[in-house]
Length: 302
Ligand SMILES: [Fe+2]
Ligand SMILES: [Fe+2]
Image (cartoon, rainbow, N blue to C red; front, side, top):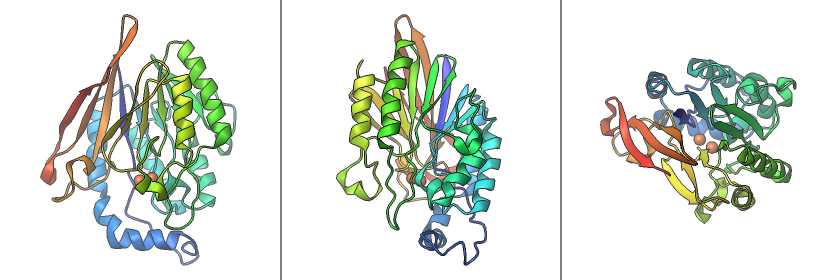
C-alpha cells in the first residue's frame, strides 16, 4: 500500500510587516483584507496541529497544492520555506503553486527560487528559476504530475490558467505514464470544474484540461483553492476520475464555520489489486469546536 497525504492553502500568517513601497500594487487590497478578516480565519496554531497530525500518520509522500502565502511579500516566501521543510524534504514533499503565490508578477520568480526543489523533476539539471511545468515525480506505484495554474491577475480576480503549451505536454505525459501502468495523480491549485458563479476565481481553461483528462486518462486529480472538502467525478479514458479538494490547512475550526470548511487534509491509501487500482480517501481534521484532529470521513473511490 502507498499512502499519499494532501493538504493545501495554508496561507501562512501572520503577515510580516510591509513597507509602503511593497503595498503599491494589488497587495494593498490583500493587506487590508488580511487585517480585516483573513487573519482570524488562517491561524498558525491550527496549521501546526494539522502538520503534526500529517507527520504522525507517516505517509509515504505529501502533496501540497498551493497558496502558501497571502500577498507574496519576500518574507512570506522564506516563512513558507521553513514550513515546507517541517513537512519533509523535497524528496518526500511535492508542491504546486497557487494564485496567492503569484499574487504579483515578481512573485513568480520568488516562489521558483525559494521552493523550486519541491516542484521539479528528480533528475532535473535546470536551475531553480527554470522550474518548468508539468513536472513528473515517480514514487512507488505513483506518478505525481505537477501543474501550475498560478498567474498574476487583476485586483479582485483569482483566476488561474494552464495555457496550451502546458496542456499539450500534459496530454503526452499522461498517455506515457498510463502506458507504464502507474497510478497518475495530477496536482493543480485550481479545481478542474467550477460553478459559473465562481467565474472571478476559476481556471479559465478548465474545459481544455478536462478534455485532456478525458482523452489521456488519470487516476486522481487533487486541488485546493476553494477552501472546502469536495469531490467531483470527471470523465476519463478508462473510467471516471475523482477530483478532490481539501479545505485550507489553517482554517480555524470556529463555531459557525461549516464542517467542510474547517482545516483538514486527505490521506489516499492506494493498492494495486490484481489488474486494477483500489483506493480510498480519508479526511482528517477538526471537529466542531476544534478539540483535536480526528477522522472525519472515509470514502472508497474504486
Ligand atoms: Fe487559498
Ligand atoms: Fe487560491
